[in-house]
Amino acid sequence: MNTKLVESIIQIILSLNKEEQDYFTERLFYLFSEPSTRELTLMAKNGKSLDFLHNEPDLYALTDGEPIS
Image (cartoon, rainbow, N blue to C red; front, side, top):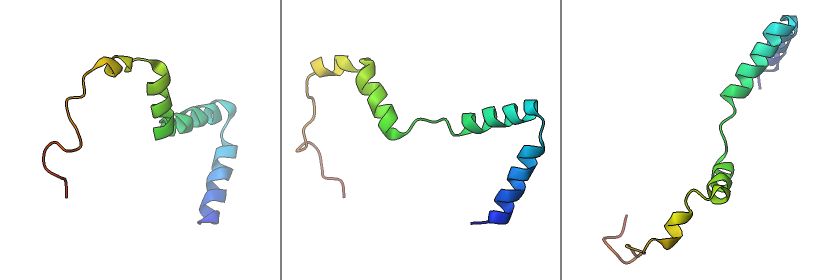
């Protein structure tokens, strides 16, 4: 880990005024705000928007087609 670089970045951030720090924080959280796979799965499960698929017939089985190698 490049601790010198990290410490330099921290010093730069601390030198910003309140408005600039707020903007930096907002942008940083926006960049890393993508939900994880687990969060996406929970949203799909709990959101009920895919519930219609429970009433769909099973058109395919594991024995259909050719195996993937």
